[in-house]
Length: 260
Image (cartoon, rainbow, N blue to C red; front, side, top):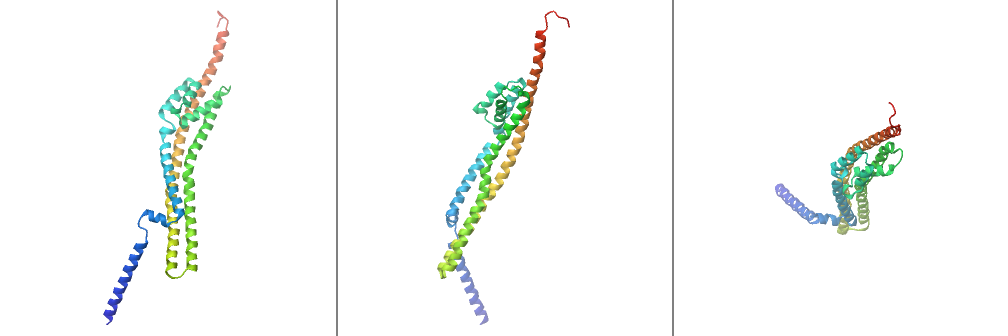
């Protein structure tokens, strides 16, 4: 008798568990699209943010390369102009569209600011450094979009969580029976899906933001060394020319045939 009762209870339990599993499988979303749909309107906003974040990552990966920051041929040409003290040739070279990069923009802006100043040889290095800092700030602005998305996405997910919890408590207080269970499950799904999507967007953006920031700092440091070397060459060339000019003028003004 006891064995038969135990067998019946076991069979009933197995049947109920199987039925619950079937119902859970039927209710749970099976595709990513169904997950997105269960998250409500905020879910589509987070999906759109993920697409924007991916586009920003690809753009940064292309833009933040050594060949786009300080190409070797740009450094070589500017070094040649600097050794000759040819500011006009260097400035014309920097203004060409095909030479658009951080190094050329910084050197070109520095030379343009000094112009024909009497203290050109002393000012050029400071002006190139100031222009370089502006170019580095521009690079960091390219990366700011990822930082904004990394900060906003979890907050949007939290907003979806709050909306879902408000709806869930409303269903508990205003509905009865199967309708309450259905609405409660729907709002809880909305809350959890939005939370998961917010974190899924924010975590890769945070990692990418940190990686690109370190890359910008490294590339900017390398470009700063190249720009500083070019500025020193300009200073040396102009200082040498200034030192030779008085000597040449003095020799020219010396009377012909005068003794040593």
